[in-house]
Length: 265
Image 1: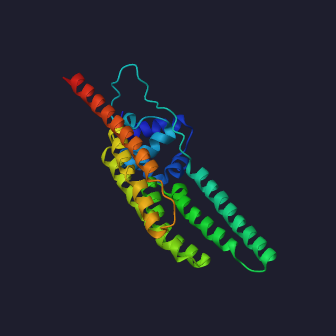
Image 2: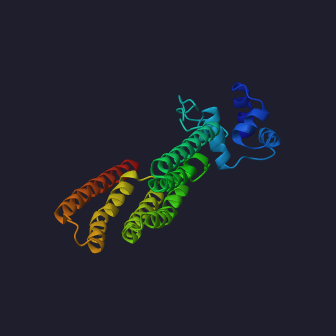
Image 3: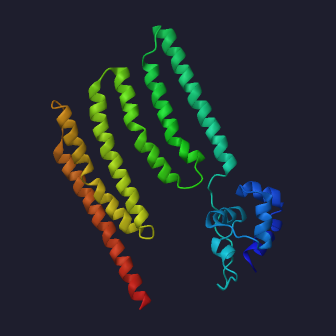
């Protein structure tokens, strides 16, 4: 059975018309018709969407024959939010954010006859909304786009907050800490991207990234705030625990990879 024949069969079993399926996959009806007739083939992204819609594995759709004995093509239900649900949540979150900002501005103005703390709340809520935006709108590479937003937002947010509070130290200290965290997050993302199929290895190297982070942050704080009491002993202890956990994960990765290598011989 060809891919087009499987799409047509599953569509009819699901009680969907070509128009209804096209709306779910976000293509035209003509595209669905071409897929079913074998005049064109969907790319892997559309195959994944069809897999979710029909609740079957991608392998079942792609392979001409299903030769695995005693195995059904159906997969476990994927609980990812549908496009309609994500749009609904986005509207609710946006409306809640606007209402919260509006209430804070009114309360602040009528209690103090000027705007002060409400501006800080408004800016913070707006920043949080921008961070949530890719989670509710992006169709692909959601994690990457969220990290990009998280990398862009902190510095402008700190600049605005430091202006509102008239505290330049907030921008200087906050920016240094934010940059340290951003660099760590990107390194961790790259580690997991490169080690997609080796979760123990990725976790071990990711924990190694966390080892120097608290020490760097505390040195930064002590540089800008010499009067602050910094407990470096606690940081060294916590970093040691993190290093130990990292070694455990790397050890597990070595154990399982070694066992897989022996089983293939």
